[in-house]
Length: 479
Figure 1 (cartoon, one colour):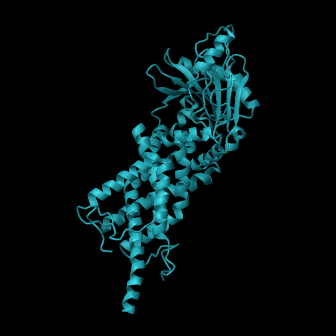
Figure 2 (tube, one colour):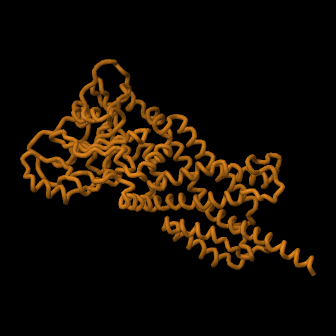
Figure 3 (cartoon, one colour):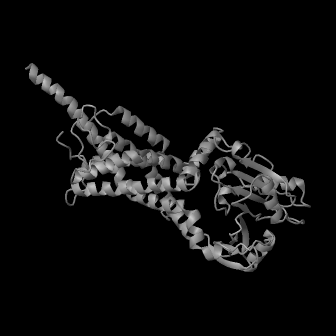
């Protein structure tokens, strides 16, 4: 009798362990079923976009690259006039891209009457127009749209945001399933795959060990990418701002920052400044904008009229250089009489990020937002963004990001093969739910916390749980 009770006591913990692992396996399976196809898209598009600085000058060499004649270059204003002359009469100049490299052409962006935008490239030595590129349809823009939202607009952005959130579940459950049992005599398949195995076991080792090595990189990609997401990212920006951890003080339009048109009444200009500030930095036609200033208000006085002359583009370039901004930055051009020049500098080193708003008539710097002005969270995100995009430490950063991305693609492939090898014909092949329901309080607490932090993910977790109960409630494992 005593021996029988001893065996029963020994079997109970084993049954609990099996039930625990089977439950984790089910969550890992459901997360992977949704995430893996999107993860492949994220990985491939992310790798391509990571090498944008090398790809675009090769792809559009006839427009972006010129021969250095070692002679003087034409002024930016002359080049802008040459570009404007090649565009339709109703086209509006919106952006000047500034490059210090003497082998790069001058780029200006125009908004066309159709509503779309295109870049015009001009030889800086002789003023010849080299050609144009659609801003919306150029390759890297399409790659970026795929990466951020599958080119499906808001719906695609939400799907990609969900994919990032569910990747957290996939990483956590994957590590738990890999975690070696102290009582196990297994030596291989922990840090190195057992290549001597055959069949599904070989694929399992390759998937599990590879996943552990890539887990930290995948976690970093998710956490550094979510602040840029269309839904949660915007809410996170607002939360960081309200807690004084995101944007610099005065970045939401509290300061009196706008161009004062000569001859306009000061009172009227102030009124327009207070009520006309609707455009955000993310709305400007800039190629790249730092996260910390993306939702800050662009100064705009509204309807005041101008009787004076604008500061020249060359003067703005000189002023930016005086403030330490010299290469690879954009200048958003004023669109209204009370608009401002906006200099946006988004370099590889986040500590050099800079945003300048400059009065279009006096040339006075109205607002200067640098890295030191950021809140703590914004500083972390700036570093994360630079690393995420493969910019921070040059080519080596690009290679590391690509290796992680392609490794995640390989995990998706190995996971799919494992699923195909164990899936019964004409069935989903989800791991059966155990008869014994393990308490798993810690896991439930973590999943609940994730659902609270990421409400969209919380809603889908609840939907998956309900669907699992309704569709597969009767199917349980033997143990």
